[in-house]
Length: 230
Ligand code: GDP
Picture 1: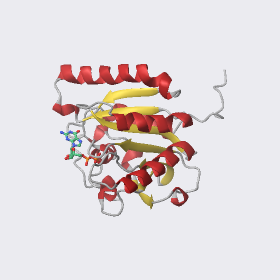
Picture 2: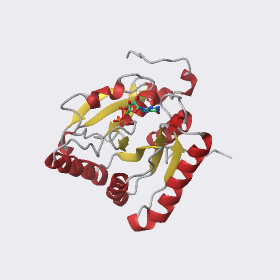
Picture 3: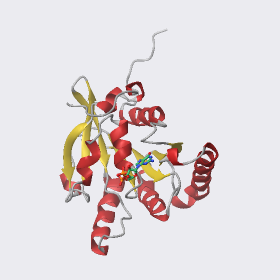
Picture 4: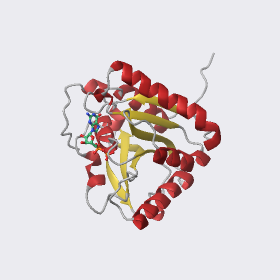
């Protein structure tokens, strides 16, 4: 695999995520890989910074570029990640939502596909929700959280573009989102944990925290590992 990114601060990039390579693209639920590899899905409004976040988390400049090519924007694009050449999990880049210049019928088709993925994809280990830190969670994001709730998978919110905020604004942004989640969790029946962090792809802010969360979802400690012998 070729890494074309800037690695001046590579120490903050996860080895597992750096191994990401394009696996396949799915236009329908049936086209998704049928093996049991755990998946972490990335969702968010168009322009929130999802592609940039995936690229920087994986230390590759153009990985999520596939999702931006015409004809693929409504697809789920999947990337394998592994260690020592063995695939251990996948990243699923879901279509961005909320793009205004899209016909209603197309929007509804995306919505159905995303909702089906979130409710029925057994391999789904966790959800990374990308939101612009200046906007917080918008109604479309709440709708998406509503779709995701029944499957009870953990959600990690990345508040991106934090570099555009002052320190005080960053803290206020995170607080506002955490408060809103607390207030709305019961109504949405959000049972699984939801965590929130600030993030910046351009300033590489929050990379380690985000990578750790994703790694923990993809590589949970083996339940059948023998206990320490006393
Ligand atoms: P997507 O549509 O959600 O995949 O969003 P993109 O990753 O394509 O980003 C949308 C725009 O926001 C692009 O112009 C990016 O360069 C910019 N962008 C994304 N992440 C950041 C960030 O962390 N900081 C800043 N300043 N700009 C960002």
